[in-house]
Each structure stands twice: as structure tokens, then as C-alpha cells.
Length: 64
Image (cartoon, rainbow, N blue to C red; front, top):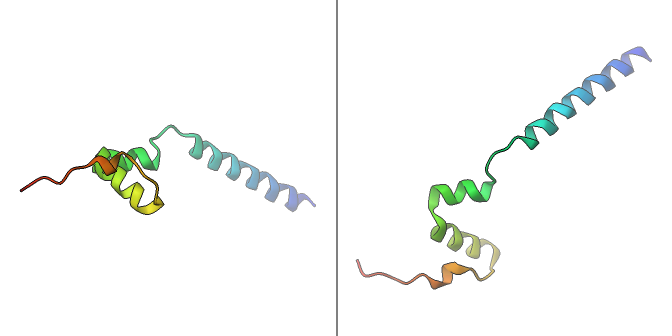
């Protein structure tokens, strides 16, 4: 019975550490992607993956 209590305590501590890591303030995946690709390209990617209309549809083709 004692070994079981030690295991439960260790598991609880591990879970608390995991929750603490999840709560750490950091940008969301969407924000990180937008900072790398820019707003317009991220919007195009999001619309392509989800099939929902977005401001990306207002993009205009530019002559090179």
C-alpha cells in the first residue's frame, strides 16, 4: 500500500508540473505562425485548411 501512495504522489507532482507548463504565457500557435508568415499569408493558409472565407480573399494579384 505504501508503494502505491508514493506512485500516486509522484504522478500528482508530474501532472502539476505539466499543467504549470501549459499555463506558461507564450503566444498561441496561430500568433507564432502569423509572426513568421505575416497576416495575409497566414489568412490564406487558414482559409485553405478550414475552407472558411477570410480577409485573405481580398488579396489582389500584383504584376511582377
